[in-house]
Length: 126
Image (cartoon, rainbow, N blue to C red; front, side):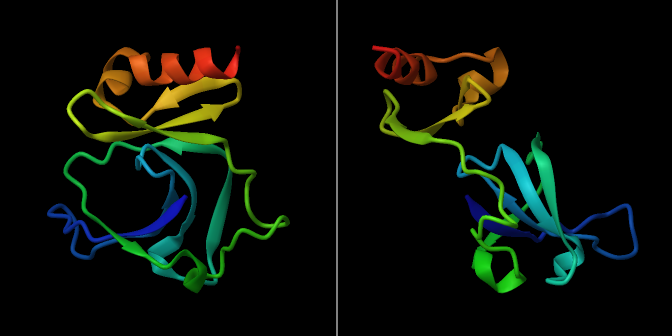
């Protein structure tokens, strides 16, 4: 899990309403966010939501400076993750979410399945 400050310059508004988001390593799901980067206004989501990052810009930031840390009372339980090597040398993150193996690769995003997630699932169920 990592914190990212959105730096997108929105063309359809007179001000940029960017937040700080706590996302999984593949930037596929939001687990919490600080509205407009306000450390006193952190919203922790009961269930992570999927985000479309196309056309948006994010900068990594220290996750602890916005008041949301890994303390039990304020943080969601982290899902188990595995790093898998792709056939072209890229690294992908496989995550177990509510009994379903997901992957950060583009194949999984388009088809809902991939060889990385299948490989991890097969290893874990042996």
